[in-house]
Length: 430
Ligand SMILES: Cc1cc2nc3c(=O)[nH]c(=O)nc-3n(C[C@H](O)[C@H](O)[C@H](O)COP(=O)(O)O)c2cc1C
Image (cartoon, rainbow, N blue to C red; front, side, top):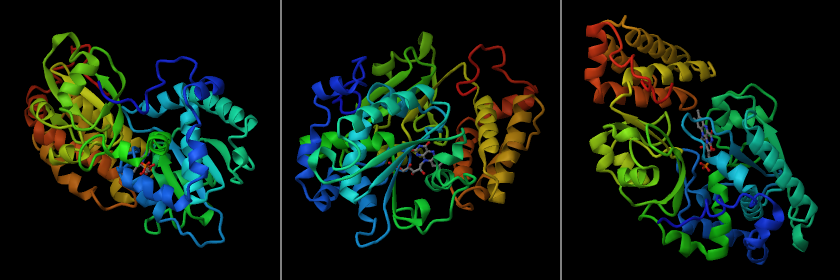
């Protein structure tokens, strides 16, 4: 059994209520927090090894350390609750089941960095999470956990929810900032990074919901307790959204360092109906696929998954069985990325669209013999060429699908049809 930091209250249906959360030990960290110098809190979070859970896995404490200390400008926190990566549904679970844990984390981060205003950017379709969060924010204000002079500490903090309108690109941190400012969600070139010039041109921390929700544990138990979990460079636990062809899809917390496939099998009961495992996407639709053999031989941590040629991303694991069609998966994800490209960079705007067209014709039985190589030719032109990495987020998995499952692509072209079309579960991502 893995240590539970984030999901400890998931089984309590009333944990979202302030009184219940307090009984479970909630907001306990604040007493200790307000007696600690903010700079020491940043140091503790750095030492804990906590890394961002939104996708990039960057050190949370280091990011906070980049925010200028001597500035007359206000500082902001943008909580990334856009959760747009296909396959990801773990932030939703925190916001619905344990919203006060996120608010407690927001207070800790804001105190450490000297932030007076936090915006939680939630995708608009997340109606239940938004309602739960707003209810928790209202309760927190009424009990003096938010607003002026929080619990007599002299520290002030306001928290607002900002609803997104359902664009994947608004999950990218600078697209998110543009969107809160009321503009079109188009990413900004970096540098400057948001820590220096962010929301309203002021220093801004952008952190994912799950990243922040780890903070109460780190303050309560100490950074050493957090750093003692996991592997050398991947500390703590992570929430994994597991979907696709498994017996029990869901959100599962796991300490880093176990075997990837053993974790999936133990948590979910394995491949649905005892079918054969074809592959595993370990970190959301943007991550390259691992073959069954690779998934069985890889350790679940950032470094091992990168060494296997993929990435942990947002922890969205998608399981493919022998019934799932890889060409169909490429058709589905390429259509998604082409649709979600914001259009400002030509390699992304044109490249995602071209990959989608080629994938579509292969899946429809109208592919040309050179099409798999055409995909491999196009991919390098999408990588590292654009303001943000949305184009890379299609090119990386596309390349891996073709390279690792070439036979399936060739079979579609030779037989002029999808050999999986009759299977009810031909697509994991459809
Ligand atoms: C196209 C795109 C979409 C993204 N969507 C999300 C998202 O939905 N949620 C999220 O937390 N991070 C998302 N990210 C990552 C953010 O840009 C950023 O790295 C993250 O919010 C930082 O928080 P963290 O350090 O706590 O992970 C996305 C990045 C890209 C390029």
